[in-house]
Image 1 (tube, one colour):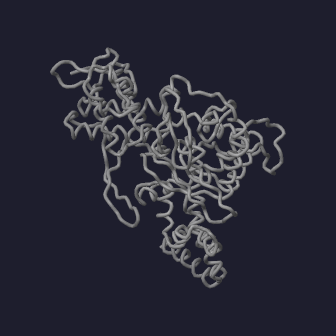
Image 2: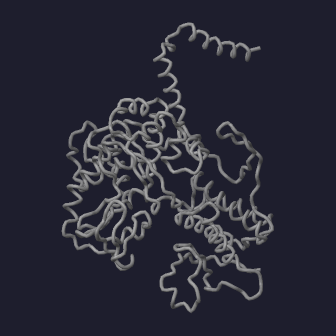
Image 3: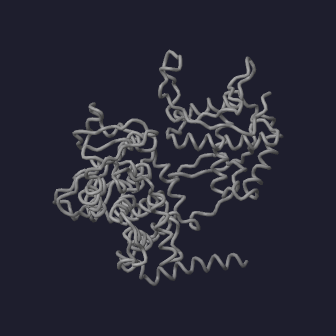
Length: 497
């Protein structure tokens, strides 16, 4: 058997220049696919069984058709398996060793990740993600007859989604995590406003924060509001182009405005339409018309050579433009291609630009520094804000509006205006979870339901229930209150028997 080396190389495949490789056809490996290489730079050992790294690479190449279409997922999966393989090699255990030795190694690995060196420790959620990925790999390897067994033990459980129960297997290697209500992942309305003001360089009362001297505040505020109003992922709002921003309605409207999300930048390359608010969309247009236009005017920015050749854009419109003289739709362009686009008037074609006209993509840093400043200067309880927290905030706020009928009431107010009739009907009739599924780009409502279970949705439904009761004059009913109290009193008395 082949003993793993404690060191492995993780590379990412590119077919650039494949014509000079002395091969007849372009390789079938996906662009950006991770490839593991042993430190002796060999892949095969003659007619013997394939090396473990070769098996892992085969598994990675099947990921696009196995429920993981995003390149970022491929890299994550590869790093998880690589770290596990390196740990096994350090302890003389093979990737496809006996179940007894693998289980012993897994126990030691769990200790290493929970109480080992500080840089090696995982929180429970990260550990759970790693165990899920390794379980997927071993199940595939067993099915393909590369592995005789896996190191995991499972117990049977029953999961309930949309009122339908099904049997599931629970991996006992996964550590318990806190319940959703103690790990809130979204911003409450008051913290949302604090964050929006922080991006604008304002204090909580709306006055200028004299102790802060930030730059590009209009840009940061516009894109931050956009992320909160649309629920778009970091990659999606980072690589938008100015021509993909919808036109601003002629009059302010309370009805959300449809916002198409191009397939080329979405997770899994799935086109969808989310929505935004009139205020957030107006902020984007203000930035495009003033600050961004001034920054890019006459810019001589060109993409660095390591990114590839520049893609010169001419005759752009809402659907596409000439790219190096060939007409291309924006929807077909990937993030790596978009950041190489050079606008007709100069500068990057990305929505957000920095001084000099180059593309700005460091939104995680902007959000982190803004939340750090708010926490240090104004509100010690303010949480860390990363881009995906904006998506969670959008989900909760949208669900709240859908459940309480906010959008339905808004639709009635604009029924006789120029609002999109199909959207008004959708808001009036569709189930809240179905609407949220479409906005977030989930494949099924089961995914949306599972996603929401990780957030604290109890408050939304409780407040909607209480609001409906108050509107109907039911919550002030003293007899109903006494009856509810009596129910719990009976429960206490029964427990004392």
